[in-house]
Image 1: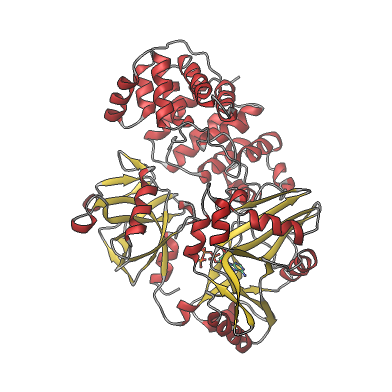
Image 2: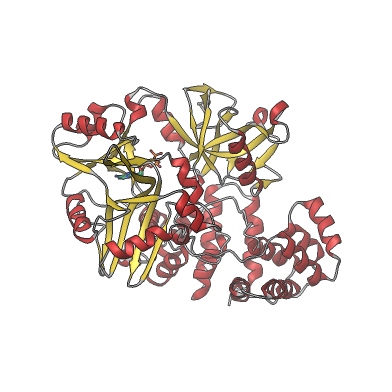
Length: 580
Ligand SMILES: Nc1ncnc2c1ncn2[C@@H]1O[C@H](COP(=O)(O)OP(=O)(O)OP(=O)(O)O)[C@@H](O)[C@H]1O
């Protein structure tokens, strides 16, 4: 049985190291020494969790309870814990200071099982019980162990690297060859449960990759589209017969039905079932297959009567945000009606549909989904004629939609989970009007506001993803376009991600240092006008190249549906600059 101290010490070392290669090497060595359930459980712990993202894994302990548990564990007052917390800014560090335990007794399994136990406690008196379980394990932990147990319980492990490093480490640890990382990453798009994947790889090596398949109840990463620079480019990119579908501007949804159980997942793979009871009910009526996985978009939508005819009204994306809530769901169900437009099918009655072509999938979709009430299929045409597609595009814009997604109908047009695929191309109204490009950027810092914005931020320091290095490099400072409500919401979101120093996976030039550092977590969409070379920013900076910067950025909206790893990449910015 592996001891927890080994994991805690490794976490401590990893916090200090920045070399990608070294981090991967150390993680892989650690995994090589694990057996059985330890592999699965450690994989979750590395991601600061006790299960996959699509399961609710929060332990239900906030700062207040953690303060109490730490005070109880070490026989000090809550006031003392708070004082130390105010000084260190980290309750893990407080536990580190207070623990006097020298003998090492905890195994990885002890800690993991205790976290699971804490999560499971619910109902009356649960707060006391949770605190008791938490303080009990702290008493058994050495200072180093206590530090990481506290951070894990609070969901603030913050090692400063994401899934990709772990997958690369698995490639070395379980297949003996780092080249398999590419395939393992592809498999992770289909089997998004890091623990399951780790277990399968540790038991079967590369052999596991042949068996990994979509499973109802476990969301796959969404297939994404490319963008084209001109309408003519569409014709070149997708030759012959192509489908043009309406592009709905709402929230991506993956619906999984297994018998009576129906679940909905977001693009971030979070379980959003409880937010959309109306959609779940409607799917129950419209989709009869026993087991099925559907892909689509939820939109704020209503059919209204105008001059005796029923017309469709699509509402802006912002309306849908009212539905992102845990409480008052019924009230907002009325206030913000939605509809879902399904455009793909990924699984049907025991069989993966991912490898079927677009036309085969669409036929199965039509056979298995009855359009009724708020359930629709994406409206589309299939044609060879670019003129017809242009007409279709114009109609979608008149309807108030964003644009179209043009899809290849070739025999190899499979569903490419997790990829920006060359089988799908988006064309939006703003491109056709020669409007400026939008950028999805990650907030990594903020500057204090002045005047009217005093007490809030004056500007946000924003970054793009350097994919090779898995690092966030700054591109621009965004200071305009925020309404007061936007600013308030952003302040609320960033408050949970403020850190004391530059996160390890963020690179910022000295002259650009913000007043507050923010760990990469929140993505915003920004309208920008021009990409220039700039020595002030780090995006794309290399030995011979200066960084890139985005000029005159204006905030558009928060992208709740994107993780920092879905943000724009350095390569995409460079391609835009070069007009590629
Ligand atoms: N008919 C459709 N087919 C595919 N995707 C659609 C369709 N209608 C709406 N969408 C949405 O459009 C997105 C396609 O654009 P893309 O894959 O580039 O995502 P994105 O990065 O979120 O871009 P955008 O900001 O343009 O939505 C999908 O992720 C999906 O949410």
